[in-house]
Length: 147
Image 1 (tube, rainbow, N blue to C red):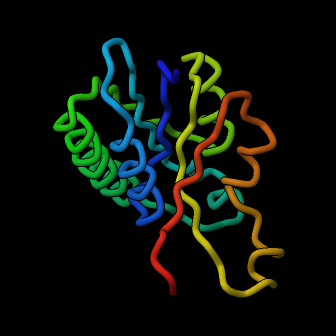
Image 2: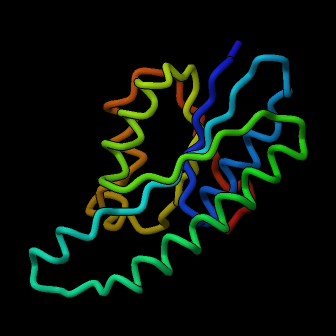
């Protein structure tokens, strides 16, 4: 039985599927749901010579706080105890570190399907990297509707 569940959320339609998938779990006594959103560290862009203004980062943070609160509210309405985590950094590193620190039993994440083989092969994905590094069970939520 999964007691501690970590749901990866970034506001995308795929991550909303992960929240929906989590809502299908039974809200049993003692089950902890941790909802994590990682704001990507802008320092690589700064090193490449691109300027990321502080107000833009603040807008991203406030937008993600609102999205995170909305997703947490959906799970709370289903009877879950939800803890929100809004972190900065490299998503894979932060999610793995958080999963280990919380000693989670299950990670739920969404997955974006790509029709084109070249895109699937060329583009590295957070999901693929997490599968290699995470130590708990993983539930991958996909969109069941045909495209």
